Length: 272
Image (cartoon, rainbow, N blue to C red; front, side):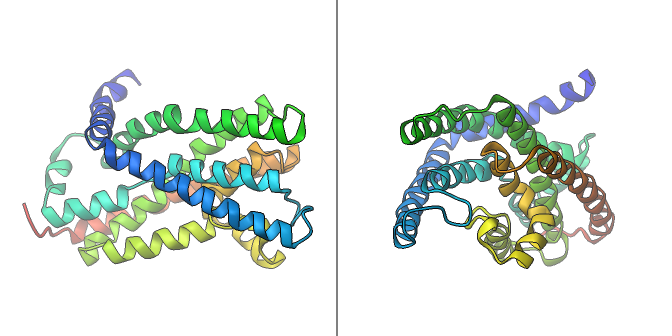
């Protein structure tokens, strides 16, 4: 284990350094996410007021505020840019240097992103959690924070990131065939945003569609962790959802390996 860490820690350090060097990009990303949350807050506020101000599909307005900010934060924590990275490396030819290194290609990409994730946890997650709990206390007059749910949320986020990474890795391997992923990435991000529940809670979907989406891997990227934190699942349901995340993580690992075996045979770079 120590040998593995020693081999891949430099990739993690490179990820941290990249985030520090391009910090304005990160700051803009965070501010953009917060602006989105406030815009959606006023939109949903209007929806709740027009519906009588009570609960809407099992969500109160306070629940909706927590969902909006926490789903956006969770999406940023579990976001993987590996498909974009692979596409750029194939376009400029630098992927040949990565393939020549005596490291596992998947892990080199993952550890490069883990450095960024660690900073996001400190800069984004902890302040957002504290702010949301203060909001819930001021709204309800009761301390709503549940330590067990928070720990299970963190576990769910870890599984969500693995799923997100593997999904994006599979998309990234498409670049071995099409050479440019710019348009495909835009389509992919839009679909994942909808299917994962980060735009609209899956609970608001028609029952048949909701059940189908909840069993897909995309729901595990944002919807499942947030619902666990909010205590919307009973114990058995919570354990089932965590197990489903683990199953998808394993299946997507195998699927990405199968795609890799075919993609590597098609490698041809445009630069380098």
